[in-house]
Length: 478
Image (cartoon, rainbow, N blue to C red; front, side):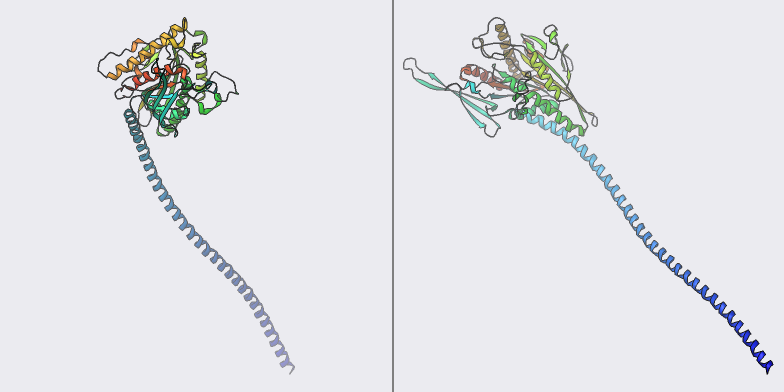
């Protein structure tokens, strides 16, 4: 029996040993299973990450394809835009040619010689009594500022010395434009600006300020006295009172800047001279040289007129114009007459040469703008001139008469007809800027005072004769 127990004990021990081995193996299998499960979990996580990455990649690929399509569309649109811009630039250049042509035709329809009239306002010191001012009526747009074309003066005269009966005598005048005392500098320049544009387009232009001393010629052309350095002088610093010369240069700067976008570049040269007793003086030269240098007029074969030894200023900034006017006004010969304490006794001529070049089309333009402030046109008996002033007045009236003769000769428009340019320095200087290749405007300035009525009538009658002239079609300067 003991042997039987021992056998069972041994069998139990073997079974327990086998059981422990099985437990160990199961524990190993469990650990391995856990490892596999952990690895499977990580694998699933990796697969999910990969799946999400694939989705993101697909989204990015879709975006990239969209971006590539957008780039292709934009590239095509840019090519079309560049082509359209080229077409527009080409059309703008063509339109600019058409504009110049149409502008010139429009100016020719208005007349290549025109006469404007301007009556200056009276000063408070001049309105001293009833009848101090002339009786005048204007017809047209004096209220709107567009100018009038008719005016009529009234004067009380004695019809009979026996009955002492007085009647009203009227003097009607009509011009292309008439500006009343209420019109300012800007309104006057609005009309002149069209001729300034013609000079920029390559035509020769002359603008004269004509009239008796004290009628406002210099104010019209230059504005307030530029030699006055008093900073408290409001008129001197009032841009609204700027004259035709600074306004013309300012307009040219603006238009030239605008045309630079279309390939145009412009150069501007200014000269300022005076003709005093039939002698030419450089108003921009040194004071010590005044009257010592003989300035000869030369007409070149290409139609260009030059004056020897004349100071030329490159007008590359508007500020130079003010400096130039100040110096010219200071140097200009002035003297005393009964009509004006500081009467201008010479013709002043501002010459602005405009040269344009378009690099795109190869076009070139060359125009000249002459702005002339003529000396006072009063008669000898009205000026009270004697001695040197008498000589001055005779020279002035002779040159003004010669200017009228030239305009009338040009108006006859007979080929080969003699034009008396050489009869005065003024007309000889302007020979290439008068006639068929130019546009001319005479700005007759008149006084509102009754005491100047006789001189006013003389000025208006002279201007009427000029206004009756019609000069032929303008030709572009070469």
